[in-house]
Image (cartoon, rainbow, N blue to C red):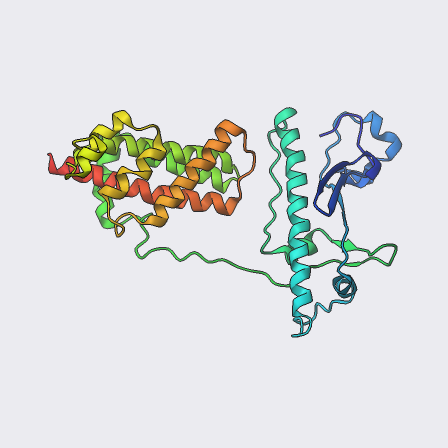
Amino acid sequence: MFYRWLPIGPENGIRLCRDDLELVLWLDVKSVQWANEVAEEDIPNRINLTAHRICADITSTMDDVELLSYMPVRDFSRQPTEEEAPLAERYEIHGREVFSLLADGVNRLLTFIRIEKGQFWLDPLEIDLDNISSHSVEFRAKAQIDDGSWFRWKPSQTRRLSVTIPRDPDPRFLMPSDWPEAQAFVSAEGQPDLARQLLAAAEAFADAGSERVALTEAVTALEVAGSRFMDSPKADYQLSEPLGSRLGLESLKGLKKRQRGLMASISFPLPILFDSDTLSSETLATCREAIRKRNKVVHDGLLYIDPGTCWRFLGGIRNLCEVLQEATASQQRDNG
């Protein structure tokens, strides 16, 4: 929202440069929500100008003559021929670079407005680099080479779809064995498990596009599940010799007093306590990566996390939490 003013024209735009690309973000009168009702001379009289469209000019400097000749004449009614395939591939690579710069520039602007000016309702622009053909159509992208004619700019005509096949049965679905627990929970006015509550909140935040908050909640859930596990009898696992003497520990439970943070737990005791069939190396690696990324968010002010990467982190963290919670619950059952 703007107050009695708009940054009209590229000369008043915002610039972001990367390698051989330059992005300029700017507005025109048509950017205003009620553009048909607003004349440029009337803008100073409007106290709440709501912009719903932004113009983006991207200038690319390149010396790939073959690609420059191919762009204006590409035939979108068919797939590229065998001879055209290398050019089509270079076109798509270039398109990904352009859309990556566009997403970064627009989202940095939205971040400034959302945080510094408090316009909390602004959502980030989501660009799927696997579906740039759709974005080209959505944004009515066009290009020109030097002073030549404008042409349709569409660096790809391929749309990629990813499909997630749930486990059978999916652990999120209610099963007959879950119903007695649900009855007891409601009747006894029970409280939900904290780690699972944090995980559910993390996934809700990720679904709403708040990846940084989602990752922070998820790592907190892992801290809760890990702390409970380290306090359980399972973690009192006796170390065999000479491992115990070399580590200066009689059992892994003593490690909790000496370890420094969550990363130490995931890097050392858990791979010892659980075999790869129960806790895969991939899950451990994903969780370590998620913790490092979360630390960059909290300590270094990282602003952007790729949505796909965020969901991969949440999946790994949920898997590890399930392993820890099941081990903790099993020990509690064994001990009455």
